[in-house]
Length: 243
Image 1 (cartoon, rainbow, N blue to C red):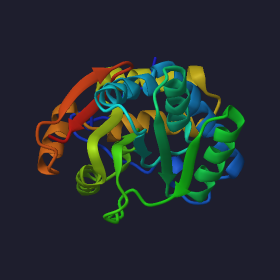
Image 2 (cartoon, one colour; image 1 turned 30 degrees about the vertical axis):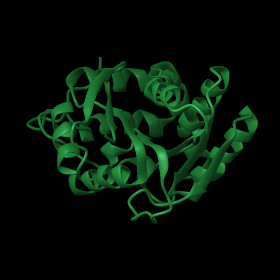
Image 3 (spheres, one colour; image 1 turned 180 degrees about the vertical axis):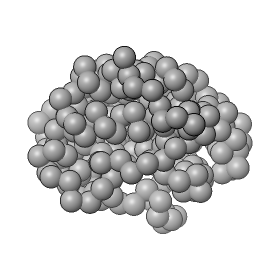
């Protein structure tokens, strides 16, 4: 069974603690091993499929030119790569770009895309930087990134995503709950041998938002009318479409 959460803290409020993956100086081999573990976890969770559904719905309503899709804070690039391959199998025309602030993660992502034969443009960029007026995409999404940020930066990210997106913003992330904590503790140990993943998984749940908190934050960020649905395993998908 997973260990109890620290006495007196519970999961009523966010508890952001430093995660190993966020620290500079992590051994590159450990970084790669952690990203591989996350790849397995996200594959079983069906992350790419949950994102593809609203993207496909938009593409079917807008036939013609390929949809331009941008992922922020892509890590090892697996979600963008999975999306590219799923879209190809379903006959959807997407132009996928993905960025991350960490050059090492981008290097790993490029190698993953080449190995799997996925057409994804990968580059270094700060998701929290103010975008140029020309730096926009039809769909802007991020996954498992919002919980890494302080409240103010998380709200800023949502606002910037709204500025970047011509049509659609999608955010997939963890739900802060006892079930989510238990699943993270057990799942990281079953699906990865990386001590980094074992450490960061439960910490990520403690730092995550409740669905109601995400919706309120999206409203303040200018994403009026955003909707949220729960996804397996104890995650949410925030969906906002420009009128």
